[in-house]
Image (cartoon, rainbow, N blue to C red; front, top):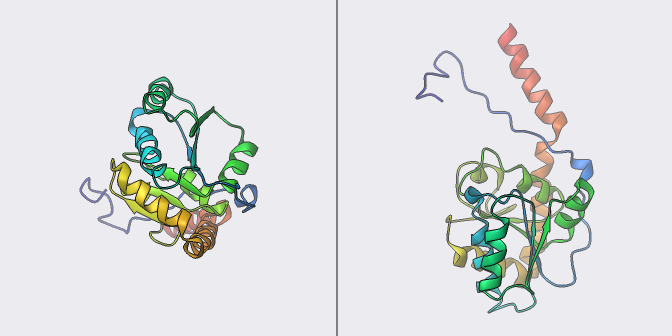
Length: 210
């Protein structure tokens, strides 16, 4: 923004979107390790990375499963990839889910995987955190701002399934770390209520109006 000429006369303020925190509350996790991807199924989302990560994970944790919740033009190719890797019994495609089902899926999952190549702001990562679920995300613009590494989850190199699998395996196998991340995730998400975002925005507007 500064390179484009903004912020020369006054500081640049960034106000992040909020989350309806009352809609997302932690609950009991699934009986077996469940990983969730939640979002659109589009090429830039790099969902294939999540599928390859599961292929790595089942070598160490055979009972793990991946839920892919969302819809988009990449769905057929992702389903084809899943079949070609013989991962059908480990991966479930749900299609688009309702807001209430989304909240339940996020809360019962052990980890959210967010492998996107870029994001404006990873609001689904904050929603997962609000539900007490840590996030393993690509270290790219947007996600590196919404994931507080290593308190609400972990950032790993984009496009590296083995790195995603490594961090997810660590979270699944280390119960004390998992509980610490679940608590850290919830606390981080509490910083992003709509009330706080609105108040911050109003403060900026009022100061500019003086």
